[in-house]
Image (cartoon, rainbow, N blue to C red; front, side, top):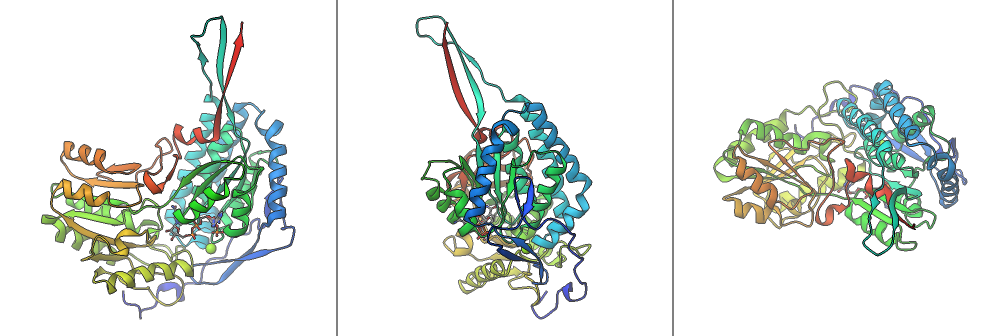
Length: 495
Ligand code: NAP
Ligand code: MG
C-alpha cells in the first residue's frame, strides 16, 4: 500500500476504553500520586488521548517500598505455599473470565490485534498456573558434610524480600505475568512499573489480584516515567532485586542504579535474531515461518526473527514469498476485526522505525515490500522487506523493533554461522532444514539463548527464556525463572 492511501482508521472509530482503575496500587488501594501527577494514555491507532493515569514520584515509591516490606513478613512470606499457589491459580481463572475486556484494553493501549492480545493473555494465565504449581515445590536439601563430627546440615530456599519489576510496552500484561508469577510463588512482595506507553492492563491485573484474595501490599503497581519512577525503584535501598525487560541501553542504567545496595539484577534485553533457511527446508513452511517471525505483534518483539539468512539457491523464491505475505497483511487498528498488523505503540516508535527504513534505503537497500509509513493518521508502518543490505548496515546490526526484515543470502553453513553470530545480541535463532544433523549442528553453533528448529518463537511456561551476550542476564519461565527470586540458606547443626 502506498503512503497516500488512507488506513481504515478514518472509517471506523475506536471502541470505547472499558472503565478501570487509573491510580497507583499501593497497600491494596488505588490512590492518587502524592503530588497529584498524572499522564495521558494515547490510542496508537488514532493518536488520541484515551485516559489519564496517576504517575508515581519518589514519595510514592518510598511509601510502596514500606508497604511491601511490611507485607513481606507475615502476610506473604509466611503463609503456606499452598495458599500462595491458590491465589495464583484463582488469578489465572479471573484472567480467562475477563479475557474479552482485557484484550480490548490491551489492543487499544498497545495497538496489537485483538487476537494477538487474547493469545498473550491466554499464555499469561498458563504462566500463573505453572508457578501456582511451583509454589508447593520449593524445597532445600539435606547435606552430608565430610568434616569430622556428627552433623545435621540442610539448605532452605527463601524469598529475597521486596522486588522491583520494570517492564516494557510490547507485551504489557504478559511481561507482568512472567515477572509477577514466579516472584509471588517464591514469597516475595513486589513493586511493578509498567511502561508509560501501556499502563492500563497492569492496573486491571492489580484489581483482579485483589479479587483473587492477594493480601494488601503484596503487589504494588506504580506507573510513571522510566527516568523518574523506574530509576527511583532501581536505585532504592529498600528493594532487594530488580527484574527488567527492555532496551540494552536502559538495562545498563539499571545495573548502575543497582550498585548502591548491590541488589540482585536480572535483565531481558533486545535481540537481532537470525532466522536461517537452508535450501533443503520445507520452503512453504519456512516462508510462512519467516514472515510470522517478523510481522506478528508488529515486529515489536524481542525475539523477532529480524535477520533472515537464506541459502543462495532458494533466496529469490523464499524472498518473493515473504514479500507476498507482507503485502497481503491487513493493516489497521488492532480493534478492527480482521486486522493482522496494528499500529506501532507510539509516535516515537514510528519515527524510530521509519528512520531505520530510510537509513537502509539511503544505504542502497532495496524494498521488496513496504518501505514507508502507512497512512498519515495513527502510527502505522508498512510491513517491510529489505534486500541488498551489507552486513555492517545499521538495519542489519541494530534492533529496529518494528515490522522490518533484512535478508541476506549465504553459501555454506560455516559462512552462515560466522555471519549469524556477528552481533552483540544473542537472544534467539531459527533454523529451517529437513536434515537432522544439520539442524542440531546449527543449534549448537548459534550463539543464542533459544534456538527454534522448523518453527519460530515457540514459547511455553516450562521453557527457559533469555539471552546470551548482551541480550540479558538470567532466564525467565521454567524452573530457571523461579531461581532468581530465591536465595539459598545453609543451616549446620553440630549434633
Ligand atoms: P526502555 O527504555 O528500555 O523501556 C523499558 C522500561 O524501562 C519501561 O518501563 C521504561 O519506562 C523503563 N525505564 C526507562 N528508563 C529507565 C531508567 N533510567 N530506570 C529505570 N527504568 C527505566 O525501552 P523504550 O524506550 O520504550 O524502547 C526503546 C527500544 O528498546 C525499542 O525500540 C526496542 O528496541 C527496545 N525494547 C526492547 C524490549 C524487549 O522486549 N527486549 C521491549 C521494549 C523496547 P518508561 O517507558 O516509562 O520510560
Ligand atoms: Mg498507549
